[in-house]
Image 1 (tube, rainbow, N blue to C red):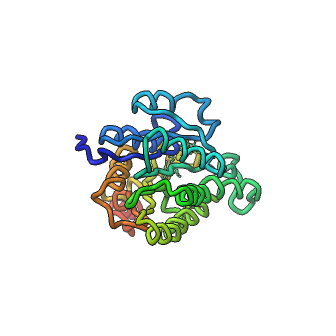
Image 2 (image 1 turned 90 degrees about the horizontal axis):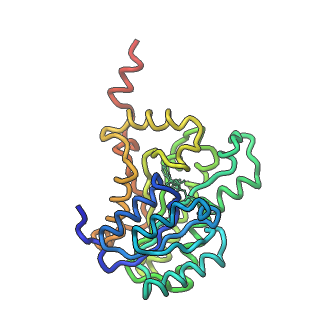
Image 3 (image 1 turned 90 degrees about the vertical axis):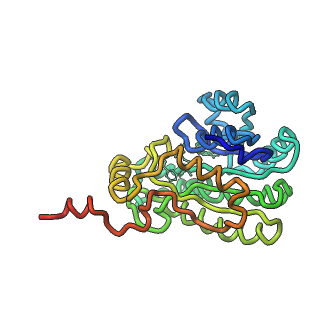
Length: 270
Ligand SMILES: NC(=O)c1ccc[n+]([C@@H]2O[C@H](COP(=O)([O-])OP(=O)(O)OC[C@H]3O[C@@H](n4cnc5c(N)ncnc54)[C@H](O)[C@@H]3O)[C@@H](O)[C@H]2O)c1
């Protein structure tokens, strides 16, 4: 049901690893809506090979970049503008990784080198992306920059571990940089807070099935899928959402505002 709402728009999509990735679905839908973009991921993700298939499908190329490296990001923005023939209109930051989560470290026993990595990869990288784009003047006025986040930034989900801190920082950067970039260049910056979704990053969280099922039973509309998230991202890149900035936008079937659902209440009846 593509309507060409991204016709003429140019962008960069970070974070497509495999077909499950939210960024993969965003690329497919943005392409169907008429956008032109480059794809990027960390050099290690490149070795898995799947992202090249996506690039072929979207008639584009992959430019490797570690999102924690200023040098890589500068090259990415330079090469993307050269390839696409001008400044950019949208950027998707779909990046998350915690060595503490991966290695099963408890939140009260974190390895601080890994904690630094979590914050650097999952949150500070968003600041780097924005700062690089701004200093290179790589974005058009009214460009839309999005990052993906999770409600553990506001509420405690114990097994989300240090990623919760990273998401809080990510959302704070969104507000602070959104203000600066809005004033300077009319660029909008937002996060989308997505339901639990079965992907490589998602499934790394301990007890992920319980996470997913609990959210499903607490959401009047049910969990939002990766495809539905992609549709929301496409809308946020379009001109239909020009005055939305500095927001954290819940895309979670109503989970964030549900105190308790009927289904969950029934489980506690004696
Ligand atoms: N899956 C969920 O349940 C869920 C829910 C809410 C928000 N999110 C967020 O959505 C985003 C995308 O995650 P996903 O679920 O599609 O999983 P995913 O594993 O497919 O994507 C994560 C991506 O981050 C990339 N990455 C890791 N380190 C990097 C680095 N140094 N430089 C550049 N890229 C790097 C990975 O290669 C991968 O492509 C993440 O920010 C995640 O926290 C996911």
